[in-house]
Length: 498
Ligand SMILES: *Cc1c(COP(=O)(O)O)cnc(C)c1O
Image (cartoon, rainbow, N blue to C red; front, side, top):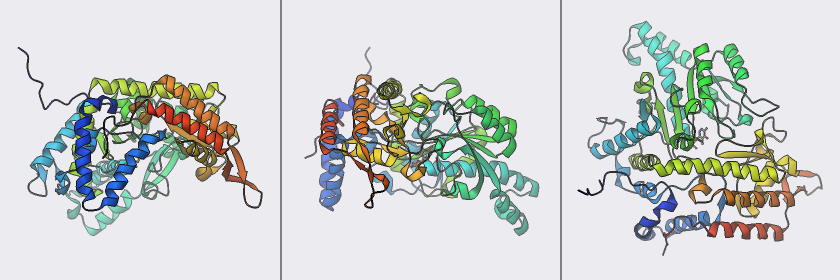
């Protein structure tokens, strides 16, 4: 007997290209929504409409961006947003949270199943917030809880003024070891402009100057010497896999908690491209991520952890987070359901194959890549080989319709502002349906533009690290080719705005 499909089972809509079948419905939904908005503030409706036009027209190589599905986008625009829901599922500080409980529990369940995690906390509003939750959870577990126990107190409010003052100082006197910024680490891993650098004493580990690869022996040596409370792995501009089994061994050896920030590569973990030693979840004590980068969900964050940290992580709100965003948790549930479909694995594999093809295409044409290639979703082009700074390269590519971002390379001679690199990533173009053959064309567009661009001079005639020269004819020709490439792969197919 044939059974009707279970309407509660998530459909296989992992790629926006796959949504062609539901596109007429989505088109109607977005048009109706824009009509409603237009009646109140037409300029907002216009800006939303202009955004899809802009996104459709740009060759997006920003490694941290993607295109969420219509189902994910629509899950965010509704009355779930109206609820206050401090607390956790079934234990709220506000009444009437039945439906928020449903979506939060679903998002957490999908996350646990997808990543094989003991516990998932889906409330963080962003990647930075997820990291803050993680830092304070580890501090609560390893500094606050033992202090309470020593004092025979059950709650911080039960401590004497003196014990509390001592605990407060101890919380502010801990150490963190993370990847250096110019090796591809993230500002939230203990750097001074971010609160993590003000909270923790920080040391960095870098990459091998000869190969550009992460040097585990150097990480081990730094950990032995510095004895951090938290060892952080994870990156936003390192083009290689990280062996998390080794990182955990190092953490265990020095008594550190291993935290992995997989904000950039969560989609590759979800899609089972990074498995075994390269999957952080079985190795780390705590894992943080964004949900909007390679994972292709709504803009937000998430924490996964082992049982020992779960009770502390669940206190993220109100410890460091404002009230949860129920509508975004709903969208996380939808995105995570999508990521559990077989087509997401195909997508993740294609992201990596595309990055490899793009890197290969660039190197074959003579470009210099940090570490000589990639085994994840991104590559870092050292543009000094073209006689340019990162700033000049970024602007020249933008003139040619190619959106990238400048990024420091290890030991960057041009510093963090002008930089010597361009970071390029394939999650977005892969969602759009581009494959390896098209990546070779993209490589040619980048190489052609950077070869034609020349460094400019200041008004006084001195060499400039910002100004550049690019013949408009060349920029236009490349932009035309980029537009051709994109026209074969419509973004949000079928969604037609009135
Ligand atoms: C993007 C990123 C973050 C920050 O995410 P937001 O959502 O912008 O706060 C944190 N860590 C890493 C490694 C990232 O790549």
